[in-house]
Image 1 (tube, rainbow, N blue to C red):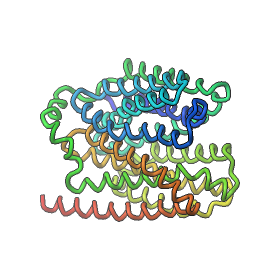
Image 2 (cartoon, rainbow, N blue to C red):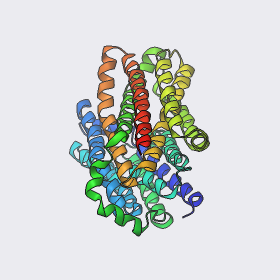
Image 3 (cartoon, helix red, strand yellow):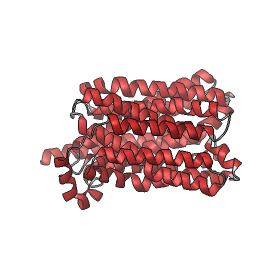
Image 4 (cartoon, helix red, strand yellow):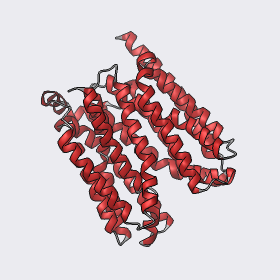
Length: 390
């Protein structure tokens, strides 16, 4: 399979998936309120999606190792479309919960399978570049999606969900007709024979630290996402329109680094350098955010953070898929599950800290990032010792 031809198709698929997902982000709180949901119930609604992803992402990842990537991506995107259409007709909070649970359960297949697909079609040398392209697609999807959702929500709160559903169906057709299977049958048989071992093997040895590192990175990022709007409003008087532009600038900066610089950087310096540099810039970004005073300082400081944070996940994915002995889907599924755990814990923790002091979520983010840096140094030492023994 020719990587240069397949990666653009996969980029488009994941971009459209994330645009569809992003469209509904600014609309869900208002739709939940319209059907009688309280703020607490909204929190449970959002958490239900992440909880399903936490549980099912590893299952889909392992299953893609057994039956192939394409069938699992079809299930994931079809499930996303179904959840959007159910949300569009929801006239009760219960139906919204059904939509989010279905969406979380089935769409949790998308990201781990896409990253496993990249691992299948790239060489070890080009792995980070491929993972970065998927990260860039996701980042750009989150740039355009919420803006589209905000615009069409003025017509009707159901319309963004209908648009997201139609977009998902278009994406589904792209996968069915343009995307070729990346995992040959002869390679799947190895994973079937070792399926019981693969459930836990990813958490053994020095690579366990990589999953802990990803949890820390996601948790601190989720805490920032949950509180930055309130922080920017209090510190610099930035309204929702300004905040939208700030996140758009950050998204573009992150996408440029992931899609354009990760490949050359990984070839020249390796994934270890990228991970350490990403954590370092995340720390700098967290600290600088505390000194936000106006629109431009907020945009610059958040972009510095986003550019650092954005390269960590693709680099970790590349490193783990290069060194795993189970299956690429097993590794990327576990990573997605860890991501979901961070997104479950991060927002309420960030909100609680913000209620104590508005700068605390970012101080904790910096402290956690420093801890992540230390964890990675420990990981490097363990791998070095393991290689010396071998």
